[in-house]
Image 1: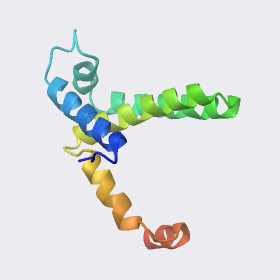
Image 2: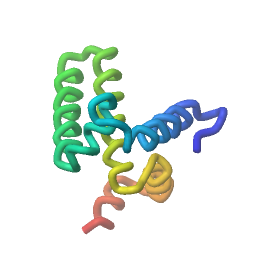
Image 3: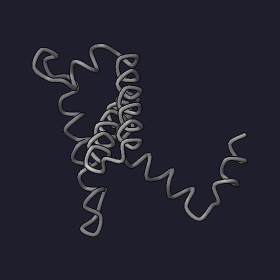
Image 4: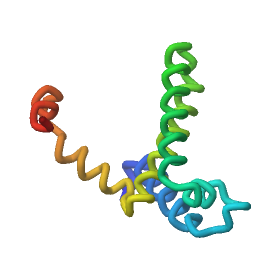
Length: 111
């Protein structure tokens, strides 16, 4: 969970909770439920689309669009995490594990 010093963590946790709450809603009235109903391939397709839109926004240098596209990307990543019974805390744990480790060392560890 986020803390008072980490409002972004709070919003990610709240968003993950909202995604979990909408997972079994009516797909006709909930975008999240519709994504879950379509299955993992639909979720992965959205992540690919949002990643591409993020790259295009970055290439254009449009800061507000970059933030908006990354927000869309993170949202769909949270949906994917929920699909696998995971949430933001799983990503935080992994980032904490990597903290203080050089990128080169981390990459070598994954081989």
